[in-house]
Length: 151
Image (cartoon, rainbow, N blue to C red):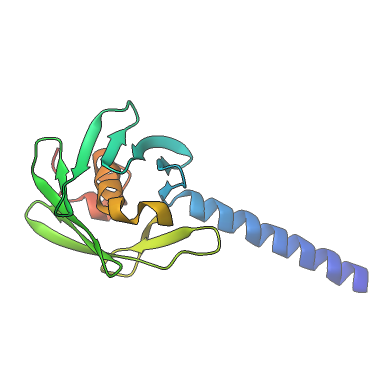
């Protein structure tokens, strides 16, 4: 009887692990090298200056004042202060918070609703708004977050 319970417990734990892994694959991630992934596909890269698309074309830059600018020079966000940053979309200000880094160096980025929209390596907190812009430009943000965005 103990063997049956042990076996069922191991199966349950394995299934929960697989399900948890699948759900985190749906959240965009920025790894320790600045690579931006969505559903395991490389869609862009963060650098100390901003972000690049998958082909290496610059799509954002961070200026000396902490403003995030798109490639036309328009201010689209503000670098983090006290664990928060702002992203501007169609004249609307969206606020995000960056959580503390876990033991792996990853931080959860949450929108104003408290939903986790991205996992971001601690090395790239200053470029968080750049990463969000890359996700918008590559149509990787959840559908309800894309509604008003025009390209």
